[in-house]
Image (cartoon, rainbow, N blue to C red; front, top):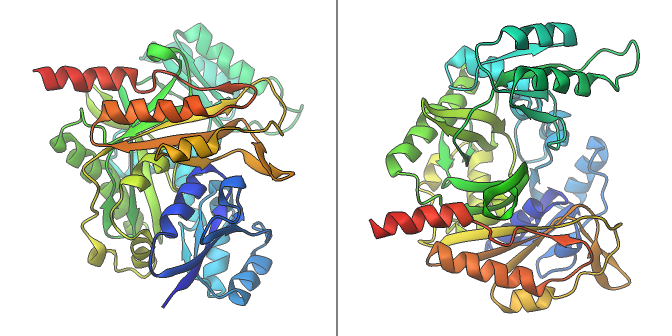
Length: 431
């Protein structure tokens, strides 16, 4: 029996999801709402204009189109309770409930959860008063701090302060534009953790964890791991420099421990669950939880996955994920490079996509649209180019060939993607 699947979202991770789901022999069609130029009329995959923020309309759409599985990925919709509403109406959904999704949407909520269940994270405190926040900073035991808003951010509301004066200025910066009399958003002040940052994701039915390989994120804007840190501008998988022992420790003491804790607190969870982790001198510590497929992690994990993604997600929804284990991966490396657009308005034509695909690469669209029959830019993060090869160096080289073939005004990307991890891996091979 073939099913129709609805994927909700418009980024590169949703393109990667649709691409992987469409490979299943059980799937007849994948609809993406709203989707982008990469998911528009591509084989089994096509876009839908259905309203994704209106639960009754979305419910009726799923029933009218015989949707067998709905995958909701945007965290804003998850925290708004779209899974709760659709499930109550009889729609089969993959994604966490609104309560559980708060683990990604609210940093103070997540920190409290970690404290209750002994999950390692940075020392922290939350504030709704800027004067109290600065007083705490003045007497904090740790010299370098991170100041950020508790809610969802795009990276612009996170400040890494080198000293206490800088941290207090960050507090003022985050509060100065507030409307007089309006309640201030909760701020988090925490110690700045130093080390190597990794991402670990898995799929769960609320009991069993189907863990994916660890992903190394690249967050420095400039080549050679220089410049300011921003949203991840690339990734590779698996993180080969991490031992199997440490990988198992992270999955057991962080992911599985959190899943068990959610079940103890009575939360239902059938979806993606993960964390971004810092490897510190005191062991791995959680920077933040993730309750949806992430970018750019999805673009390097899914191309390596041997399992039928539709079978795995369906098993999670039905509470029988244990029957789909183990998760099997290609014995290869995947590297993805993010291409962004800076200094130009949307609507710039993108050229060279067919050349990159002709090299055997996967080009996952993020901020793209169709205009007069051409693919154009439609956002800051435009594309991710992914290569899968037997070794990391070859994958890096091939991904960069694809990036070099693609052109659009204002295109920026990191040209030495994976510089530091490749050096680490090559050094390990020579020992």
